[in-house]
Image 1 (cartoon, rainbow, N blue to C red):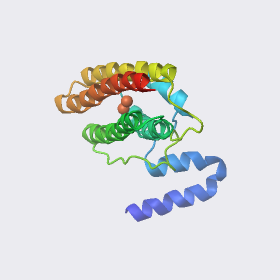
Image 2 (image 1 turned 120 degrees about the vertical axis):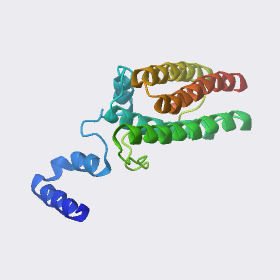
Image 3 (image 1 turned 180 degrees about the vertical axis):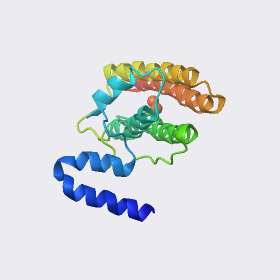
Image 4 (image 1 turned 135 degrees about the vertical axis):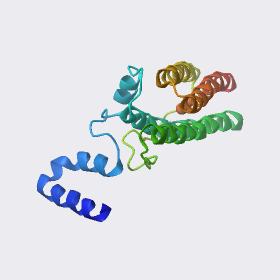
Length: 188
Ligand SMILES: [Fe+2]
Ligand SMILES: [Fe+2]
């Protein structure tokens, strides 16, 4: 059954032509069809979401997973080990956030969605030439505190205790990331 439908999709794809490449890639991986094109657009969209749909959660999975690459790039450019460790730790937690969202998706519609690898994640990028500066750390801290508020809103909107626990754990850690970013700024 799965193989048959896979064959059908492949056949349909032959007829559609390369213009549909992105559609096909997203469909096959379970990513939303009409995803915001890049990370900035995705963040802008997510900022408007008060009650997340499964598609919104999938977009957030991609953003959270991309956060690891971003923080690791900062850690690699950090001027000392303590700052590097703190940044890398926040990065690992961003990936953990993606995995918690996967569990929320499973609770919402039973779907087994997987965190897309760097090659499949449209928002994954390891920025070159980026380095931690006090200004950047302040901007990051602000975003992280915003993340805490966002997750609290989502927890309330979905109104399910189990989902709320996962979303609030993410939110609590986003607050920790904000505090960590402010700490890193002092270490620079
Ligand atoms: Fe996060
Ligand atoms: Fe964070």
